[in-house]
Amino acid sequence: MAKKKSKKEVRSFVVESEADKIRKMDVATIEQNIAELRQELFNLRFQAAVGKLENTAQIKKNRKQIARMKTVLTERADALNK
Image 1 (cartoon, rainbow, N blue to C red):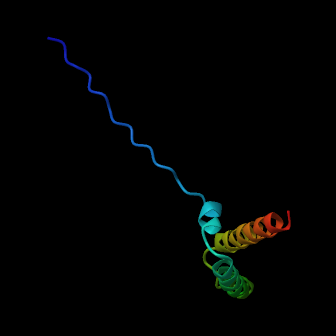
Image 2: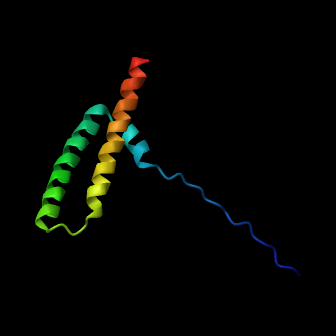
Image 3: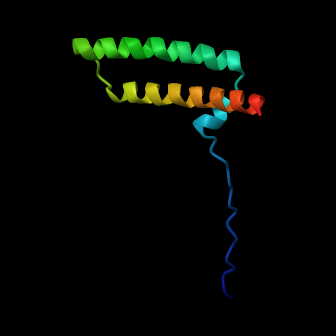
């Protein structure tokens, strides 16, 4: 007898992007997160200047996260103006 091939179950899941996570937040939360990230960015830059920073990529990550949040705020402001 021939063996039957079993159908493999394919599970699909959607990976939520950073921008989608930010879009689910309210404006006050986004602005609070921006303030926290800016403070952290200041500290990282200070550490970099002193030579104590171990993970230099963290500076770029923080800048991009701030930009994402500002983009979402701009999208919302533009949507209200239309």
